Image 1 (cartoon, rainbow, N blue to C red):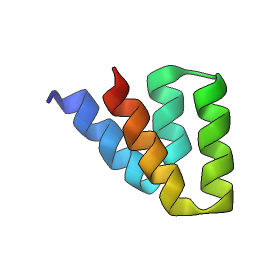
Image 2: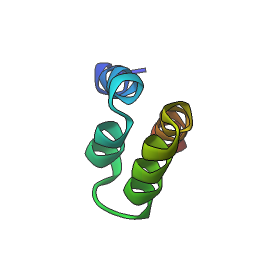
Image 3: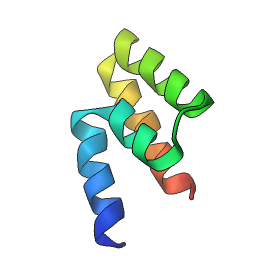
Length: 55
């Protein structure tokens, strides 16, 4: 695991939409993550980490 991915995981725990934005850009993954984070914070974190490990 490189340092960039590690930093994105740390950001995903603190601010999930930011990590998705930095890794995937603006798109459906970001919209889904923003909605999950607004509704419940933990699903937003799980989704952000899942998106990061999809690559």
